[in-house]
Image (cartoon, rainbow, N blue to C red; front, side, top):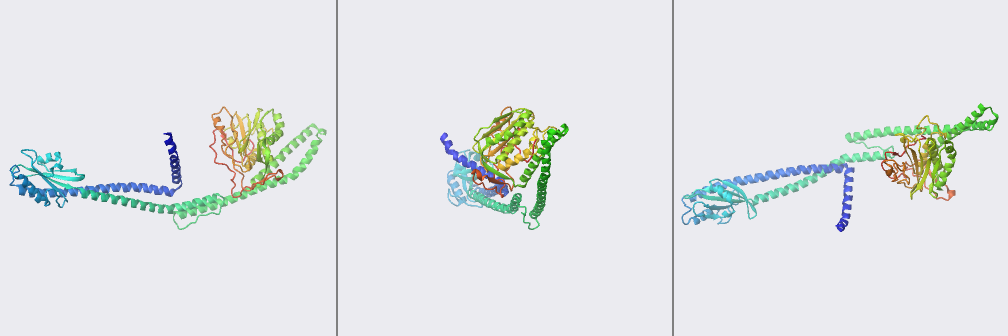
Length: 592
């Protein structure tokens, strides 16, 4: 059995592949579905009509045979009664008389078939086994005992039987003589009718097959006239969706397809105009943000110089003025950070951001980022629990990675309620991940969709210890996109939240799973599912115009720029469905 199973395994695999191919063709081809459906319905109609026609023809042939046989039997009975009216079957020489009568009746000899309007036939006579000895002439043995009993009772009988493999109609009736009545039988072979029915059946089958082929060809041609414009419309729509906004359908004639083409062209024109308008508005907005940010730098520099002078001599000022100078310097720091973030956002939106990728030890970059927020964590009473194995090499922009980690840790400290913040790093052959986990207020249902929005806050009344600008997480997710990586968030009320950064080992590398689970390792129904490392949903790669560069001073080889024709070339495979407690964020956004 095992050998048989192994021998049949390739056949099962081929059958499975063939079934999958047929199913895919069935799903994707409207023309195939229409032709197959038309063939199925036509086959059913042709089959029913063929059966009805065959049944009707067979019934008419048999009825005609029966009517002719009855007429022939009645005429032969009259002839026999005329010849045997003075003959007593029980006298001597009656056998010869009966044989002679049958011979004259068939005109072909004792056993040969006769012909009539009903076709060939054989005749037989018998006195029956009643009063006296039985005298027979002809092939009486082919007549059934049941029919002989019926004829002996004086009734006319007809019956279908098989004689030497040939279907035969037997007509039996009594014949009067000078003595006792005789039983007269005529046997009509139905071989001709059977051949006729076989010919009709073959004709119906061949005609039905030819008709089905013609119907399939006609259905294919007719369906092609409808499907071809739909396919052209789908191709035009795909090219339009790919950015070719000048693609239009060819409108010919005045039928439904022409009206569809005209409606589509009007819609495409309207969408192209709206897209161009939105692009213009977006460009104006980005230009405005960039211009305002640049224009504010000059007065801000002047204000900064004056504030630094006041701050340097704050010990000589009155207490109220001393506090004012300190607040002025603090807010100026925040204002400068906001301007820097706005400039960075404008570069990302404009698609001119560059990735200074180089070979780095990710743990060293993460530790350097943590050093910048240790003072913030100490002020909040938050312990930083680190699990950062050394030697995890990755091609990345250290400045951007450090900014991502700094924003994530500062965000965790702000919302961790003084509880420890865990920073964990792990890698696999394709990627390296950094997980920042806090045990604070967490995220309410629906907030995971908003956490990366610009200037969004989970609680408006909550004060920021880090003095964030509200753009940190928004810039972080853009930095992750720029690397072709993932930045994902998870959270539950009262259980804290987690942010996971996953980067490919090399710029342009493919990520199919993250080395670290996103949610908590235990205490959740979905925890086991999270440990499989499924990414949930990948962060898209950068939009058009963002380029990648290498730091040649580090000895790294040149990296080609991202293709402007395919802005999604770094995107991974379609991700697995989201888990209930895990939401992967892909929209741009900001701090909680």
